[in-house]
Image 1 (cartoon, rainbow, N blue to C red):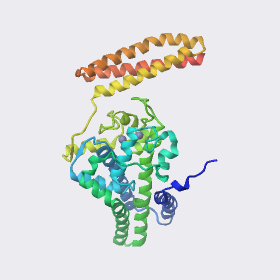
Image 2 (image 1 turned 120 degrees about the vertical axis):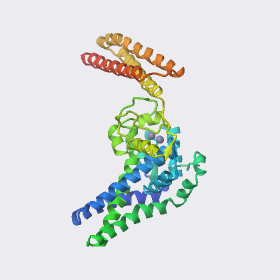
Image 3 (image 1 turned 90 degrees about the vertical axis):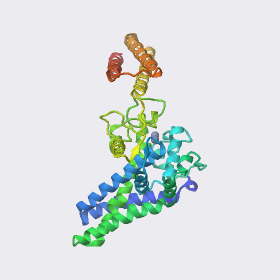
Image 4 (image 1 turned 30 degrees about the vertical axis):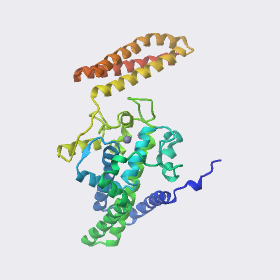
Length: 376
Ligand SMILES: [Zn+2]
Ligand SMILES: [Zn+2]
């Protein structure tokens, strides 16, 4: 059967991942039963989990890996310090891996290549050392940033102090002030906003590499495995719209539609209003719609080919009636493609009209296909 390649195991990382997970899974329930949950511990957990995860999404990911906006020192400092508390390595390492992921997505050079399975993409790539190790030659821009290099040098000390010592100390002080056993408060601070928060933040980040390449829709492209999922977006502060992100990685938004859950996007926008960040990069609406219409057309063509090859006569006659839909989708796509190439300013109304038409054509296509294959 399967043989574990022990010679490739990264023992330090593995012990940390397994040790923190077991401590959280065993320690937290015992603590909650024996001591209970103080609102202060809960508030600390909420603050630390939000600060850590947003530092990964806003800082490590959208700012440093993709340069999707420019940030002033306070934002860089905050996201580097709390990013360190996620214990996901330094920002420099993280960005290097992540840039490789985008460049070689679903291929061997992609560090968290989903074609090697859920386990590998989620955590396996951290447990087993990459063979051979990557040279990190894709982060020359970040090496020029003094703050990034400072964090790279002291990342574990920063994570240890801010992410574990501070919540432990605050738990101690709080209980002392409330006339309770200070050591129990310290233990709660260590376990809940400390260790359990690290485990939650880490696995939610890992979901982006695993589930976000497996679950959800692909409205912009099927040329890679990345998918859009509202559930994943909820768990990852907006990173779940991963199909959009892989198509337009330099956009500061992942959930590009106004109704999509993307707190990281809202935070970046708010920080820009406060003058703390600027240069927010957005893909023009015409190009986004073009990607959606192109993908709809490709899907329709594929369906049509399937129906034509279907043995049942009903399916083949349905294919004839679908032909018109596919033609319409192609015509709309080419018209928009020309408008985008000529840089024609399209009104919101025109674009909404096209979007609406694409969706209703796709609905009709699904309906006809379902009836044709059901009666076949
Ligand atoms: Zn991805
Ligand atoms: Zn990315």
